[in-house]
Length: 147
Image (cartoon, rainbow, N blue to C red; front, side):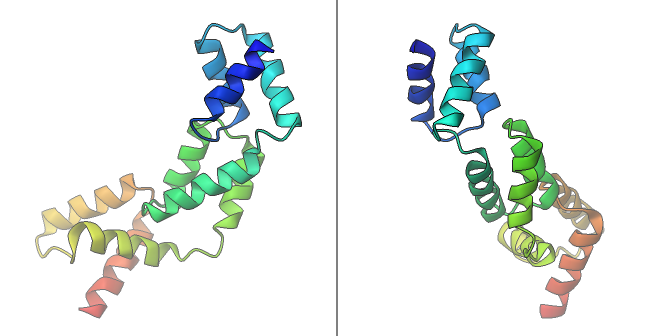
């Protein structure tokens, strides 16, 4: 009961995956088996909804201007199951990643730099945000066409 109460209390700070909650419970001094049983109970009772939470987090990451790879990594880092990650990524399937990348470039840089070195820095920054090279270059071409 104490582990369940503490789990509910921790969830008051925000939705999370069962794996992440079990980790936090063990960090608070609850043994691993009890933490696992408590998270299983909370999942069974509907307090933990990994699919919905993963989809919500993916949408938030998308609004941050992140690319597909970074969003997927973020979900995995936060302990969501592979199925929840795949469902969340499927919810983003109609996303125009090139346009999303272009919007991130416009927000951060305003326009494409003339200097080759600065362009390389821009590409590296967008790759850190989770975009592949082809997507970044296509987004840059789109921005240059608009200018």
